[in-house]
Length: 272
Image (cartoon, rainbow, N blue to C red):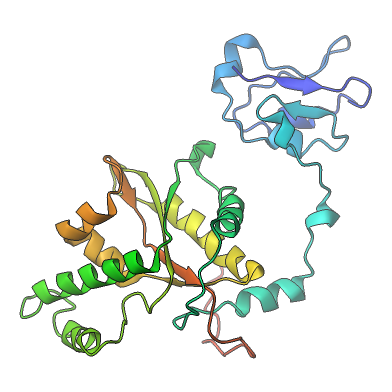
């Protein structure tokens, strides 16, 4: 049952909290009272935190993990547009990794950033699985190759493409997981329309945040295809029943440093 805590000394009764409430359950102030969530509406709160985030006076706290509240101004989190542009444009898919593993505590810090990713109705359905042992990542790559062997000489769209990857693997080179030390999965409840969008949004947050922590990433598309179609890999990964994993992400320390930003095709925008 959600409620809001009002600091009556600083509240100006501006009603911003009631205006921005996604569910429209905060009653506006009266001459004698302050904003409130009526008891009969409290179960409809989705704990999105808009009410406290947009309170200019910082006079409101949602009674949900109040000890974790961070008071910040726009200037505290502001990044110069040019710096942000360089940071995002400089993001690379890393396919050459150091053998050094990343401490679990550091990985958890990056995932902690990703947990703030948007989700429908603030449902926060995403859960995470980290394959931390490099040997286990290698095993996943091997099972992905095993799946590729099953689609050779079939009508699968990749049938003509996989023999080269298999031959490379057999020669000792890993084009599946690129010898990455770690592999990250985000999974969500199986949706009637089979849509893992919210897991992709969360993984993208991880992908963007990781370089700030010195970590390189790469989307593991071949592993995703194998996971969707190959029971031995499904059985090995043990994604919980009733949940579906999005495209997983390789990560680790890059063997090389980025020194420039490559070009891209001109942006194609249709204005309506």
